[in-house]
Length: 239
Image (tube, rainbow, N blue to C red; front, side, top):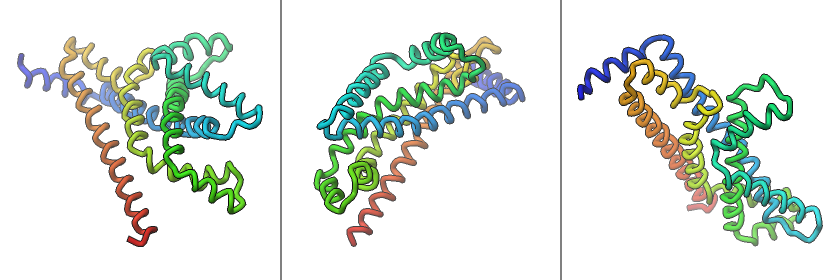
């Protein structure tokens, strides 16, 4: 196998304007959908986690808790690709919705899927915070929601930051299934180059390298955030 020749052919194709633009569009979509999906997931997951840990003395919290259980079971119990296919090819036509970009559908589905997983991550983070923090906030006259938002959740985020990083990495890698709903992602772009040259060896190796680089960047960012938060905690403690 002539690796040098394969690389030269691949690089010449990638350097062409059409495939270069296709590659950057795919890379941008991969990053954009994963980032926005994680943000949506954190918002949804935090809301679900708060519902799960709040006292169930009244009927409304109990009803909301059951709804959240169904939501989590639905999105954790089905593969991401199935959720994308159902949303794009079943739900949108059934609702009579037309003209929605596949990228937007991908963002929404990724966000809702991530929310189910983040909810469990956030719930464990909230439970790891000393219950005295909630009691102290309530003793100062703060309401349950305000105490949770300003005191408990910030501490919980510090505890679950590495796990949130893992969720982000998972979303980055799972963007490869976006091709099922015609989204140009990293996989689609490099696959197109392989199809043109009738040789997918170099495109797929290059794709693997790009995913590894993205994961290393995310890992570096998470470790940096952990160090910053650790320094902040030491300053507050006067160490």
